[in-house]
Length: 453
Image (cartoon, rainbow, N blue to C red; front, side, top):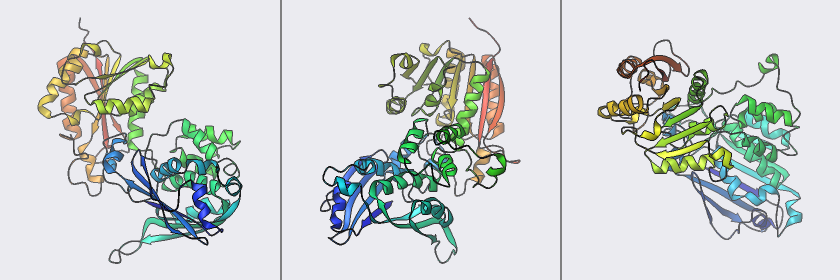
């Protein structure tokens, strides 16, 4: 994906000083989802253009996904500007975003003529204008058409902005509004995102007519985060009557709905000591850590790489000792008995069992339900019947899935497992439920009925 910034203020090559990137070189940066390049396709005294090119590595992008959904594999992320480009911009142009320039401080403080182009951006002409025009930009957002044989316009626009703006302000506008237009961040939105929004929106967000929409979308429609951000801007969330006039919020991602459903179950059963079995990169662990009701949290996975990612996600090396003592991360295989896992209130297998070869499922059941034997076990897995709603899907949702069960198949396995090990089991749908195919995710709650010594 590509972003270009052009100025015609002579000497135009001073843009290199503001961006701290020499116009005569190609600059390369490693970013979490790939490689970013900064280069200058033109650099004269009269006109200078800096280009930020982000080359997304699909494997690294998938490693950051919080679930094994189809969307982690089939998406437009490598091509359409989004929060990935905003994140690369923040890393590559850090000094420019702050308005700092050791060599040209007076120029950094000056509004200069700028032309900005984002050739492929998911959004609409109308929304791009509503977001950028109030900030003084002349906005041209042209819909990108489909191939002639298909006809019509796609959901992408070619965005061009022109105005006389301080470079730092321009970059902060982009940093906030690119993800707002895309409306789909590639990472888990935590409370610290509020600080990023307020810092980058300083001086312009409070007076923006679309500040409510911006806060909601930037904070991934997490209502309590948006309310907190708006309250610090001294803005009141609209009433229900006013909300009808606002753009409809996007659906909560299935990964988030799944986490919320699991957290709800753990709260219902009053679990304090919780196992996240097959924790992967720590998406559920991060949610558990934020809730003080969970006094001991253990994440296990067979992959040491996944555990390293989880540790980084949780910032274990920077947590206060009291917080760090609540969390343990262990390498463990679920098909083998592990005495360390005995005696916990609850265990969660979130989108795990479908990654186990069917002949190994009895060993997993024996180690979890028979040996570890937590008071409650929560299991989620894809509902194969729902796959017909994923356009273009011809196999399973993830290449590592060994199977995907229908609701009847999952209930048969769960009921047999519960009966074998002295548990009762109940089932819940997760996600929007279709009258014929059910919900995309199926959830089972196992509760101990037979106490063993």
